[in-house]
Amino acid sequence: MKLHTFPRGPNPRRVHIYLSEKRLSVPCETVDILKRDNRKPDFLARNAVGGVPVLELDDGSHLAESVAICRYFEALHPEPPLFGTTPQEQGRVEMWIRRAELEVMVPTGLVWAHGSPLTRSVFPDQLPEMAAQSRKRVARGHELLDQQLAREPFLAGDTFSMADIVAFCTVDFGAALVELPLDPAHEQLARWHAEVSERPSVRD
Ligand SMILES: N[C@@H](CCC(=O)N[C@@H](CS)C(=O)NCC(=O)O)C(=O)O
Image (cartoon, rainbow, N blue to C red; front, side):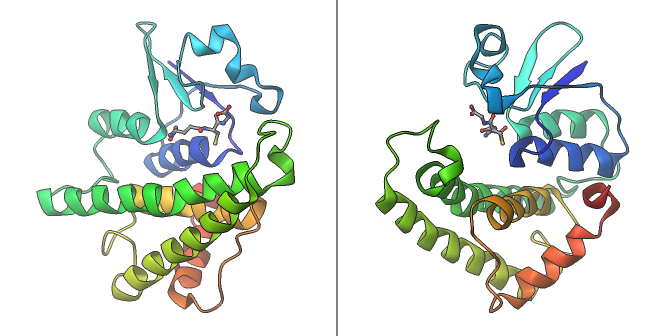
């Protein structure tokens, strides 16, 4: 088994935090996405979509998509649960994973692609208007998370879950690289962000 990864990327980072929470160790090979190694034919043979992370299994097959990779490990190692245990918990975790992806990660990615000088060489047809609109969507996504975190300590309830991992990696990426800092008005999002930042799986 081997994880093809670029640990600083927000999507691979989810898997690294997940594995650390589960105390699982998996051999890793870094793919230099800055050099576009993930767009070369040998990598595209592993993942036709071209992104990292990709998990190579011992039978030579591959699994892509960060959440799918974590679900694979969850089925093999259910404890401690990070996708919920009861049907209700599992539904809530899934709901907040989807919301973190669709309401926050998608627009954050669009700001990254269309509004960052760091990606201009990769996306020469940047649309500043798309970046501006997506910034507003990110603000609404942060608001959604903030409201939920005013009700519950973590996104899916009382316990830390995969939904927190997905949302945290997204919010952190936005703040660090996409000029999408946390709004001081989002006090619960800031409280949660500070708490999750202190988890050994995130800090180390
Ligand atoms: N939905 C995928 C997204 C994968 C993805 O876009 N990964 C980024 C790194 S954070 C990447 O490989 N970017 C370089 C590229 O797509 O060429 C997942 O969750 O794994």
